[in-house]
Length: 421
Image (cartoon, rainbow, N blue to C red; front, top):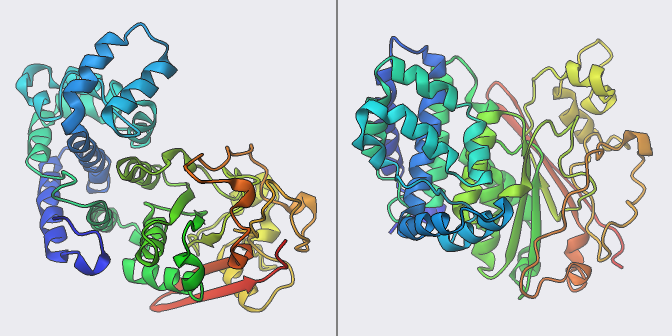
């Protein structure tokens, strides 16, 4: 049985899978720069994972797709997702391994296979910009070899759990980042750090989270591959397996976003709550309120272009020497600045869309300038107007930030309690 708890994860097994996939990248040597290996391998690994997750219902989906050919796109998507038993499906008549049955036309079949994905799954693949590589691989006589090797890797949910898949993606990203001389931390945060941050975030809420009917929302404004969101849900469910946990995130890096989106699809989480884009200049969750907010922003990255375009330099911790770098954000929070530098979260209230409490910011300072997000998904027993009524801690605003400088790591937590209405 695949592991579902971090303590049960076999890291040797994860490394074994990573080594097998890493060996596939060696096929690209000479035809691709090492920095571009991940652009080919990661989307193929995602497709292999999605294909194996869909395997039990594949035949039924293909049959229904033929029947629903004349339906509207929306009706067809809803019906095929229902038949697949997932948020996503692939209506192509071919499975991923069957792409190998016609070697001479594998590029044509792979293009059609990608087109067969449902909207959200296709959205994830598109952010890898993978279709541009299909013809390039085919011209280099590599496409068949690479797909064949990927098909040898068993990534079925029965063999590799969602948790283990997250570890595997992070290990691959780390290796590809090293090859391209990038910093792996730009794409994900080490699991030990993530666990510590979530422990700090949830500390003291054990009783409230253990109550029957507990509902929580978690937001990560720089979610990467989704590790913090997944760990947050995992720790809450360890306290209360019946708790309803909704995950929201936004990510700027296309490949990290695609992996996070695919991960949410396979986990049957609301994948549309993972948004692509810059949280500072285009907030994808404008107006929403969350129980918990957690983030490891890319400290040290120069965001001066965002400052110039959107006038948010003061919120980026500009230091008076013309440096619009996010490193100043952490220091300002620790020094107890009366003005919140980055208001990741605000208190949840029983009423929908309440007037925000006075936090010292003018309306023009508010970063929530994007379009309104849809309400939380309707689920059995879920009543937004009453979700916080029995839980005083639901009005808590928690902010966890990390800042790395060489070998030093810091974390800060600020908790504000407001009267419960």
